[in-house]
Image (tube, rainbow, N blue to C red; front, top):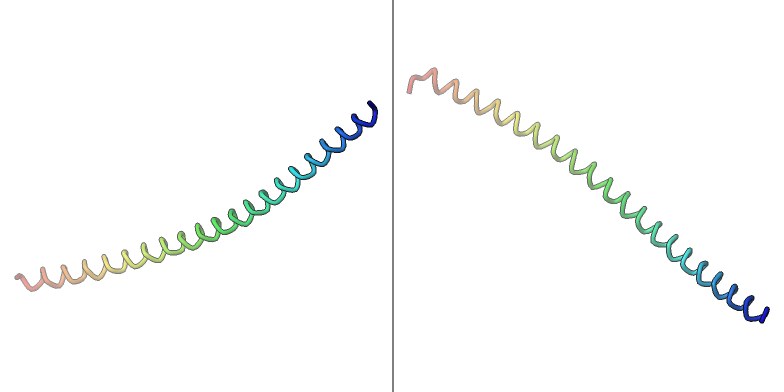
Length: 74
């Protein structure tokens, strides 16, 4: 009887160690995915800034062209 309790305890510990190993692996995968997502967010933020800057420049040029056209009294 004592032997079977030790066997049961051993199986339970083995199962827990296996699950711990799986969870640790999943955690490591999630950390890698999080870092990749953070890198993508940084890249996209940089792109948004660049596009906003280009939009502002284009608007300035367009306003300048409109002003020049208005001066010509067309």
